[in-house]
Figure (spheres, rainbow, N blue to C red):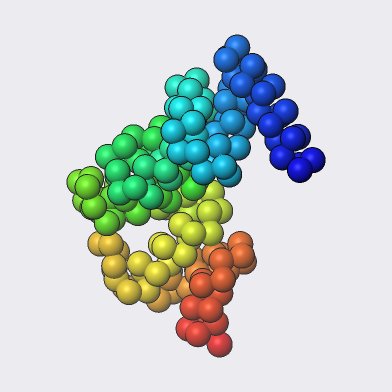
Length: 171
């Protein structure tokens, strides 16, 4: 009961701040409404924060649209966040272009974005690049040495699948 009251009180103040243009409050409202599973309010506040240039809100909208297979919208928000250097958005944008589901498949752009994210230390992108080199997927040549390098980096950054794959390849 007490926690619920505190959340409602916080929400009241965030709404006031968000309506006055506080971008952090807008983002926090999106997060709160995400927890409450209120899709319309979540989208409303994330959009407001994204329109004000908040990178996290742009990424969150990209995820929200991707989960609904609205990949054209997801691409738009991931691209905005990617151009600002968000490595999670870069990885997701790379995967959107690799899969080509509801967006134009573009292997060159896919690999460019995945590599940008991987070079920033994004473990998921490092895993994706490593796996692609290992299997010769996504337009990359099979190259076990390069695959091992990326999988090792991903494993060191806490990616469990990469660790298992690396250990299986390089005992």
